[in-house]
Figure 1 (cartoon, rainbow, N blue to C red):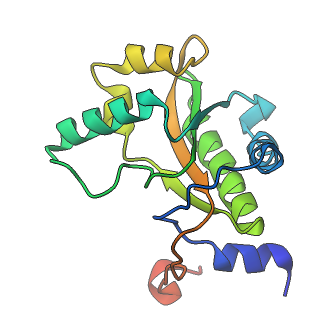
Figure 2: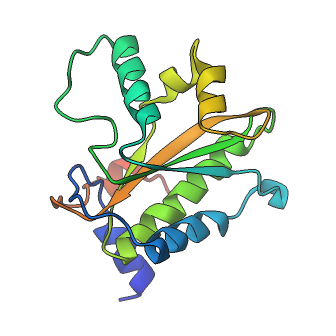
Length: 176
């Protein structure tokens, strides 16, 4: 079977990581996979902010997410203690930015799976990133001017495994 199709079939969200950090080579491969994603009108407006899992702003985001959701002390933070988190931001005025960021993050997730690295696509901090502290987070994460949060992804070496999700093609596909 084609290696790309195999990677798509094998990929699943990782919710448990070892303490082993990514190598610079692994991180570069993942970032370039995101940069190589197509963007509408080839605008290439996606910005990637790379953080170690120990960065204090991630704890602040976790606390704000929990406050907004009325959650008290979940068993894991939103990135499941992954050693690396990448936050994607983009031009807030460009209508295709969210779609472009989604394409980029999927490229990165598939690249991670091909390297046998765990990954978790993250949307759950949207409320925190777009709420009353939006400007504070944009500044702390060094977003370019006029950019806003779109999506994030966590990376690391897998400490747990999970079967890829199942689906019901008969229900989810309509052929006309």
